[in-house]
Amino acid sequence: MFAWRLTGQHLKQDDIGESVGGPVDTHMYGIEAGIETHGFEISLVGSVIGDDDIIYPWGHDFLVSAVVCDLYQAEGKGWRAVLVYDYSEIGIPGLIAKVAHAQFNTPDRGNNAGPDVNETDFDLRYKFKGTLDGTGIRARYGVINQDKSLGGEDYTDMRMQLTYDFEF
Image (cartoon, rainbow, N blue to C red; front, side, top):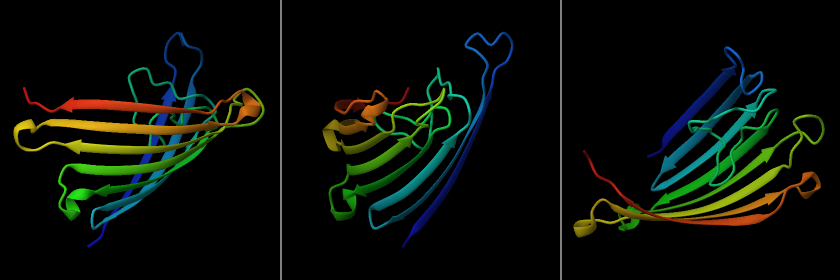
């Protein structure tokens, strides 16, 4: 059996009042298509940004987002491909593996010029059962490559998280 998913996103951002951070008049459009079957989830996402940077002081939920980098730059275009496998399908409940690749493109010239970025991420999560129920561990590793001609640099990012779910 297959489960299909199609998601759209639109964000419109305008300044109001004194424009303390400068004038803002921008937008973002994005679309995601995905399919799930037999423990696998595959999705492809694309997004474009308007003439100003997206400002996100209280967090964000961008469709084209990776472990380290996000698409928020003015005149940016990006895409992301994701493959997820839930190992409960073969008898290992709580174990999920994910690999994702994202590409963030910005203009090469002008006020909004910036380095293009490619990021490949590997994510492994496990939620314990039994005595440790509610406890989880997550390992994330990102490989970031940036266009050096516009000041970018290449680096890696490793994150380990220990989580505990509870209700109050």
